[in-house]
Amino acid sequence: MYTREITASIILIFLLSIIFLAPALIFKTTIFLIFGLALYELFFLIKKPYWASMAFLIFLITFLLFANIFEENRMLFLFAIMISALNDSGAYYIGRKYGYKKIFPLTSPKKTLEGMMGGILISSSTLYLVAYFQIIKFDLNFSFITGSIFYLILIVCSSMAVLGDFIESRIKRIANVKDSSSLLPGHGGILDRIDSHIFVLPLFFILLGVIN
Image 1 (cartoon, rainbow, N blue to C red):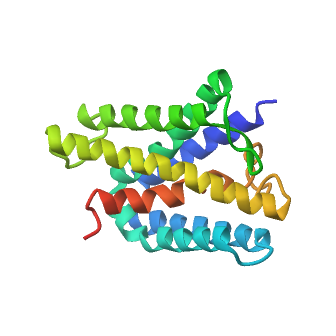
Image 2: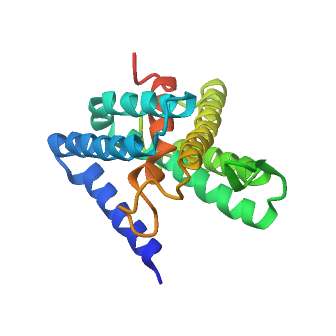
Image 3: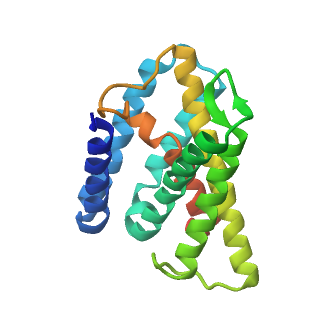
């Protein structure tokens, strides 16, 4: 009955343990394991090479190449994960209550324009305040200009989360499946959980200037 909630709690505990407690080798090994499982699922979903599958593969490989950077900036890594997480939650609740206009009727019938805009706004605004009040601390000197640029970065990355989710949904639609696998009870597969993250995390690190 509470399968989805139990799985989500286990994932959250595992994620926080890896970020706060795991040594560097374990952290990077986890990134490689996630990459391997996601690639395995993607392989069985792709019916033929086309733009969606190729885009997903490129971002998935980029995600892997950033493993060292993620490990060296763990709090920023956690912050970036929250971009997609809050976007997804905000879009779900706003869309469920106020959603009317369908934006991807063939690929994601339940997604609405109102939900998408609500998710982006909630994610961007909440995380801006989290950074501003240093609830999660990282090196960022806030001023009117830097604060405005940072908020714009959050909007861009939150929008990218929508794109990542859409592309994975498109791949599944072509493959005529509901989930990428049944590995995570109540949640589907690894791809279903990280689709937006693998698009958002590298982009966020690049735009923030962590990658020089």
